[in-house]
Length: 298
Image (cartoon, one colour):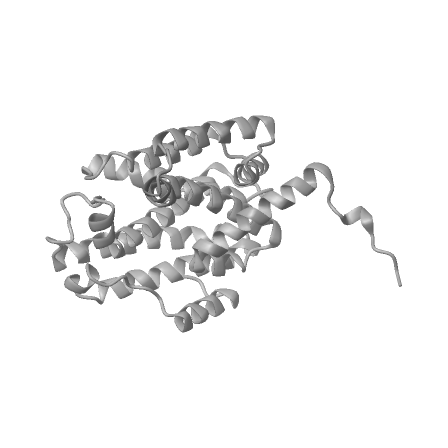
C-alpha cells in the first residue's frame, strides 16, 4: 500500500482555518436550503468564502432575531445589544490579528483579508443589525439605509469573493458593484414581502414604509414586485462580467429569487400575508440545472 502524503494534511493555523471553515459550512447547511444549493455550483475555494460570509451574517441575525431571545426566555442573562457589539469588535480584532478564538469569526476574517473587504462595508452591516433591536417601523430613508447595510453590503462581500484575483477597470467595477447591490437588495425585499406577517406578528416589525399586513393592497404588493424586478434587471446586466467559475452560482441564486418574486406577484395580497411562499424542490432542481448548463437571466 502506498503511504499517505502527509504533506497535504493541514497543520497549525491551516488546520485551525479548516476547522473554522467547516463550522461555517455547517451553519449554511443548517439554515439555508436555497443558498446552500446555489453555493454547490461554486469552485471549492470561492464556496468557502461565501459560506464564511453567510455564517457570520447568520450568527448576527440570530443575535437580533432568534436564538438570543430564546436563551433569554430560558432565563439566560442575555443582552442582544451587548452581544452584537462584542461580535463586531471581535470581527475587527480578528481581521487585524488574523486569528479569533471564535471559529465563525476566524473564518470570516480570513475571507475579508483574502478577498479584500474591510470595515467600510462591514460596519454598515452591524449598524443595520443594531437597528433591528429598536426600530419597529421605517421611513423611506431608514428603510434604504437598513437594506443597504443588511443586504447590499453582503452582496458586495460576496462579489469580492467572486472576483478574487481578477482585474477590472473603474467602469467595469462600478457596474459589478451596482449589480451586487441590486441583487442583495432584491433578495432582501423578496424576503420582507413573503415574511410580512411573520415580521409584524412575531417580531413586531414593519420594514416597508407605510405598509402593514393588515393594510397591504394589491397595488402596493405589485409596486414592490415591480421594484424587485427592476433590481433583478440591473443584476442581470452585470452577471456576464462575473468570472465564469462563479457565474453559475450567481445565476442560480438570481433565478431562484426571480421565481419567488414572480410567485408573489401571481398570488393575491390576501394570501401573501397568510402564506409563506416558497419554490418547490422540483422547481429549485430545474433552476439549478438551468444555471449549471449556462442559462442566464434576461
